[in-house]
Amino acid sequence: MDKTNYKPATLVVHQGTDRDPFTGAATVPIYQASTYHHPDGQPGEFDYARSGNPSRQQVEDAVALLEGGTHGFAYASGMAAIGSALALLKSGDHLIVPEDLYGGSYRYLTRLIPDLGIDVTFTDFGDLNKISAAINDRTRGIFIETPSNPQFQVTDIRGIVAIARENDILTFLDNTFMTPLLQRPLELGVDVSIHSATKFLGGHSDILAGVNVTKDPVLAKKMRRFQNGFGAVLSPFDCFLLSRGLKTLKVRLEAAQQSADELADRLADHPAISRIIYPGRDDFPQKKLHFSQASGPGAVLSFELKDKDKVNSLLETIKLPIIAPSLGGVESILTHCWSMSHAAMPAEVKNRLGIGEGLLRLSVGIEDVDDLWEDLDAALP
Ligand SMILES: Cc1ncc(COP(=O)(O)O)c(C=O)c1O
Image (cartoon, rainbow, N blue to C red; front, side, top):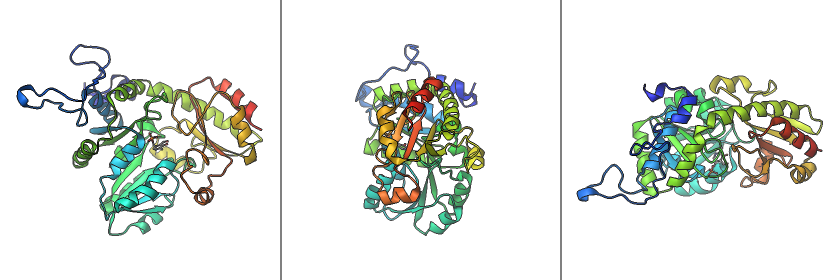
C-alpha cells in the first residue's frame, strides 16, 4: 500500500521509514556520525551529516508525509525553519506579514530580516483587502500564522492563496499551533508549511526543532541548498526524539484538545476572567472560518484576568503547569504573553493588538482535566 493512503493514526506510528533497513530494529538508529565513508573515493547516498544523514532523512520524510508534502527539511529550531523558509526571498524583495504573531517571529521580521534588504509590511490579516493593498511590484512573499498567537486571529488561507497566486507571490504558513493533523496548508495551496517542532510534533518539551515542508520541487531544491549551505540542521539525536514524539502525536493532541475544550468552558464561567479565546467555543468570532480550514480547535487557549495585578499571585500559586514561554508538551504550560512569549514586542504594539498584561496563554497537556481545573480554580483570584 502506498503510505500516502494511510490514515493519520497509522502514519504517525509507521512514518515514512518505520524500522532500520539494515537490522530490522524497531526504530531507525541515531546515526551519530559527522561524515560518511566514500568507497573508492565516490560519495554514497550520504557523504557528510550536514548535507544529509539517515536519522534526519527519516524524520524529514515522516513530517513531509504527514503534511501531504513531498520534501521535508529539519532544522535546529522553529526560528531556523522560519529563517530558512524566508531565505527563499532575496534582497530587494518585499514580504507581507500579520500584525498578530509569535513574538520571536516578530523579532526576526522587525530586527533581522530588514537588514538583509527585505522590506516587511505588517498588516491586519483579518481583512483580505488590506493584504491586497499592501502588495507592490517587489512583493514576493506572504507569511501567515493561523490561528495567530496569542489572540487566535484566524486568517482566510484560501483567500490569501488566491491573492498570492494572482500576483505570483509565495505563501508561507506557520502551522505550529494546529499541526498537520488539524490543518493542512499545502492542500489549501500554501507553498511552504512551517513548524516549530519544539511544540506539538516533538511533544515532550525535550528538544528544540523546526521543520519545513513543501511539495514544489523547485522550492525544495532551493531549500535543500540553503539547508546544506547554511547548516542550521537538526542533530541526529534530536531527529530520533522528534520521530519518537511524532508516534504519539494523534493520541496526545486529541486528549489535550478535549481537555482544552472543557477547561475553556469552565474558565469562561469563572468570575475572575474577563475574556476567553478558544476556537472551539461558540463565542469565538471566527469559529466558522477556522473550521472551514482546520478540523479541530487545538489544545491552546488564552484567557484574560479582570485584574491584571492578580497575574503574579496566580503564577505563584498554580502548581501543575510549567510557567514558561512554550506550548505543545505533554505537561500543561502557562505563559504570561506580555513578559514571556511576546517580550520582544514593544509595549505599545502589544497594547494596540490587545495583548494586555492580564492575558495568559494555556497550552493544555494530557494530565487529568479535573486535576488541572482544581489547580487553576485554586490559583485564580
Ligand atoms: C507559533 C510559533 N512559531 C515559531 C516558534 C519558534 O520556535 P522555536 O522556539 O522552536 O525556535 C514558536 C515558539 O514558541 C511558536 O510558538
